[in-house]
Amino acid sequence: MTKHLNVVSLPLSVLIGYEKNARTHSVEQVDQIVASIQEYGWTNPILIDENNVVIAGHGRIAAATQLGMDDVPCIVLAGLTENQKKAYRLADNRIPLNAGWDEELLSAELADLAADDFALDSIGFTQRELDNLLSAAVYDDTEGMDIPS
Image 1: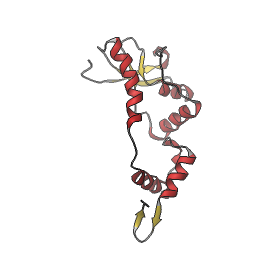
Image 2: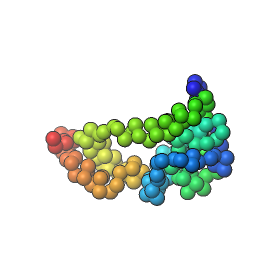
Image 3: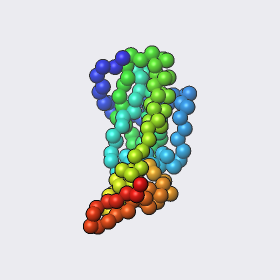
């Protein structure tokens, strides 16, 4: 198992997509990843094995390709068995889906960003979701942010 994680910059051309990658990436989702990279920079390296086969990051590779990038940051996860690689590919995509949102806090955070004219197109919510969440937040100038229960 990898004990030390080192980020290395590698050419996209040497990375090998996992042929049985079960996760799909729509054009819209890749566009969201592109917007995120443009707004925040590259914050989540591609995870690869010792043979440059992608363990996690197929969507980020698609975004990097769309952006015309030559090199991307990668972390080599050395020492994993084939079954560990397969399982981690699934876990990396599935476990985040098990989380939820505190909708009151989420609405308040979005309202704060919107009040500061921050472009909300780089955070992954659809316009309909943003409209619903922002309509739940009621701003009162004298008392701050009030969120209906």
